[in-house]
Image (cartoon, rainbow, N blue to C red; front, side):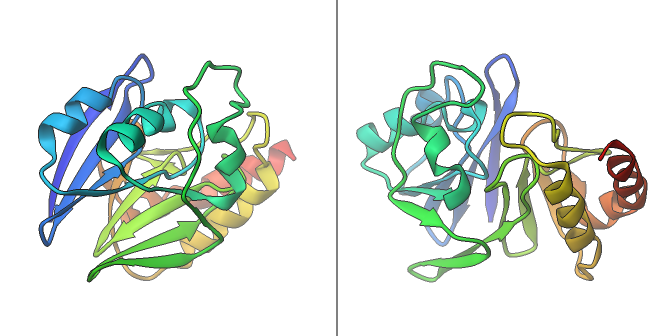
Length: 201
């Protein structure tokens, strides 16, 4: 599996191109991602969104149109693609497939699993391919996603961290912003985050 990374826009949102078995998957194409993606794919098959915030979906519409790609987005965030809750003028797009909870998609032998970890947004998910997590704005290196935005939920973030803390396997984390990490490393800080969130509820 080959992973290409390019931070996009003022928020430096990581856009990923994952290439495996001759297929390219585009994860979280943010602001200004269109030309970079077009220059670095040979057989693109889908656009995958970890969640619906504008800085992760801005180039959905252009890539969907120019490359004829389907969009896969968590069901709880599908409305954000055409109605940004953060007030940004996001080019509207419409998901072809709304992922409901934890779900595995098979792209002709290339298996991709969405793992639902709500809190940052209602649909916030990790995209799992083999032993890699594209963690969006759920987990970062030494940090977690904010839970004070419109449609965010501290209660759901608490539950999601408790769910993630129980996972025994390790994964390499490629977050929505910043540098890679591992799940085992981030699990070390989760009890402190859980206690902090509890104190804010």
